[in-house]
Structure formats: C-alpha cells, structure tokens
Length: 312
Image (cartoon, rainbow, N blue to C red; front, side, top):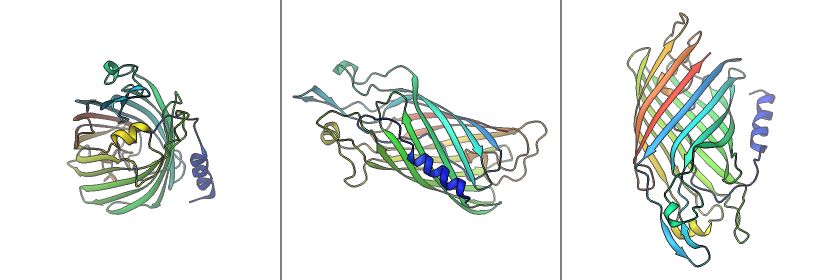
C-alpha cells in the first residue's frame, strides 16, 4: 500500500468529532463492504432500513433523576447516503451521511420513554479500505477497513471501527465475513460520570448464490456484542440495566442491471456482496431487498432492508 494510503488512514483515525453522551451499543449499517477498487471509480450508495416490534424500554425509579431508562440502541428508520471513491487498485475510501428516526435518548417523562424523535440528520462518517490480498475469480480475498463516525448534534458517542474483510468465491457461491472492533470516544456526560470509552465487537456475514448474471440470493447476519470485558466506564443506566447485545439474520435478494450496453463478465463478487457490480464496464445499478429477524430480546423483531447502488 503506498505511503499516501497510510497517511490517509492516519487522518481518519485522528479525526475526533466533538464530545458525546454515554455510549449505546454500536449498530452499523446492514451492508457488506467489498474488496474491489479501481483508480477513479465511483459508486453512489443508498442504504436504508425500517424496523418494527421494538424491544420495550426498561424503566426504574431513581432517587436522583426521578426515573432511569436503559441505553439500548432503538431506531425505527435509517437512511444512509454515501459515495465510494477508488483511489488505486488496492485502496478506496467512502464518505457519507445518515438520517435516523430514533428513540429519545433522554425522555422527559415515563410516557415519552418509548416514543421516537423526528427524522433528522444524525451522523457523518468516512472510511478507508485497503486490499492486501486481491481476488480475480474464484478464491479468497482479504482486506482491512478503518472507519470513523460522529454525531451531528454532538450528543451521542463517536465511533472508530477497525476490522478485517474476508471474502471467498467458488463458482456461483460466495461468502464474506467482516469482524470489527468498535471504540466509543468523546463525552458530554454528567459531572459525576466518566466518558464511557468502551470497546464493542460488531460483525457482518453473508453466504450468497448467483442464479444468473443479474439475480442473486443471500443469507446475511449482523450483530453487536456490547462492551468487551470491563472496557469503558459504564453509566448509572448501564450499571443498573447491563449491556445490550443485538443480533439479526435474514434473506436478501439482489438484482444488477448494466446500462449503456455494458456487458457484465463473470462477477468477481456477486451482486449480493453489496458493493460494486464487479467487472462491469460502464454504468450499473444494484438493488437489494430483504427482511432481517431479530434473534434476541434486545433487537427489533423485524427489519426491512433496501439498498440501492449505482456504479459509474
């Protein structure tokens, strides 16, 4: 990887958005990052999710504040807009914004504890992906990702994510796994509390099958294990209610269309890999649609996923 790429990673890791509140469990976008890159390549991405049958909020009396509520991450709607840019054949970057309709972090009454705030711009972020073992056709590929995200309102936790991207293709079958370590930092906490600079573990995984050059199907899983070991400084709420792991899994169908007479060759990565429609010369569109089921009581029972990606 060229020196400029190392410098770019250093800039991302050094970026610190201003202070934030006590950290909730980190819930990333429901997507699979990919290991295809080319100098000057561009891809617009829209990652969207709607969740329902949310877990009820835990509430207990508190002598200091009147009542105390849990800090689980509960979001009804999420809309992310991103632009991915290929820098070299081995390095690419992405910048984006995210709109969310999430549960009130600090409800003013017990009646408001399970209500949702209005839809608003919630986060901005940037990432860099380095491909250390590329793949052309069948076989394995390996890369690394570094991402930083921060809240626009400066009232929630910032996150730095560091992880590995692993892919494997055999014929029409494709598999990918992305384990991540996620660090929370910054803090607009109460005077008596310390910043909860904890580490979470997050993951995304997929097994997919190509039915044709245009259609593919995948089983995907996404999850978070909150607070590794005794990391961070749990807030009063975290000490009272504990941490909140979340896990989802479900089926997703993908369709890829090549425009302007572009001819898709045998894809190095299927449409289901949620990145570029690999090896397509010209403009292409990939749409993914599926339903994820919550696998524990901390997770919304159902999450509808829609991804729209345009490569040009």
